[in-house]
Image 1 (cartoon, rainbow, N blue to C red):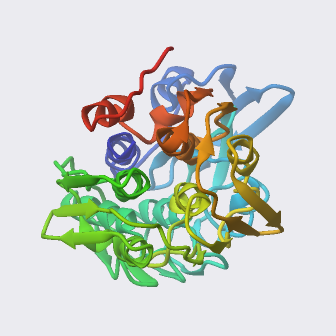
Image 2: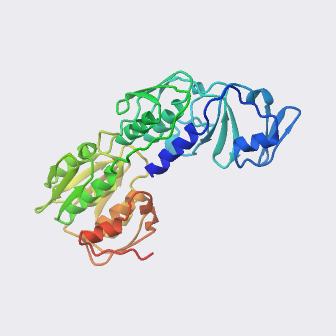
Image 3: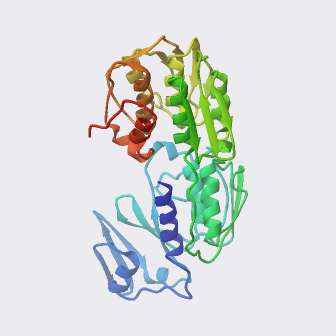
Length: 380
């Protein structure tokens, strides 16, 4: 996933360097600039674009500015409403210098006009929002300041890669990120950081099965909150520079947890931790503060014998002696992983449907668990 993101950065930001002038005088020139845009014609110095039933007319002077044309993709998601304007633009209005957004396909727009630096406060800490604004600002005119920015390691890794490409970024990993716009970026090589959520998933598997796992090539510093909570369950966890060893022998203790933005306990570990608490020796309270409707996996765990009651964004989990196998359905990426963990300790054979969600966030997870001794196979 990160490789795809970094490749997109190279294409979007380095692929359209600034030029002394950008003027489009013919339909062929527009098509070369816009790629697969359809229903385009130029008449009397005007550009006409047809997008379904909407015709957008642009004056030719829009193309003679000494600015670039960049490709922009936006998403319609309730989760992003706190930072993304409702008109679908991927950046706030004050970050754009005389912008024109041209629809070219479902969810894709062409932005004509160079971005300009701005001071932006994010009402909600958002990883993707921080990353998108940071990418947009690296070639903007002037300086951009992002306040209340996400501090996740993935944000830092993206900033490091952009810096290798020639970006001028300060403060990544803190709540205030400053980006000084540069004229263009150049290709660069980068090393993808270890996936802290995958690491945490295998750590919980070791505790659930009372096993002993050594995880290599990981980044313990990225998992501070997770390691702290898992140690409270009674697990023995040893860390080195890029290694984590996890072992568990006795009872699993109940521990309360509240998801929070980094460096707090990650929401992407909540479902897996709930499985752990479902066989702990007491009652725990799990509070989800990041996303709504993040307890969809609860009904599937209850089918396997878990005692879980949900009240709003809080789940009360009463530990049971064991879980029982049942046919269950994965509803999202992390729910898929949590059901695998539940199946590892359930009595009988568990069948999990819709496991294609796993492919978005775990590489060869079935093979890795099988190598650790799990009786697991992917049917289709």
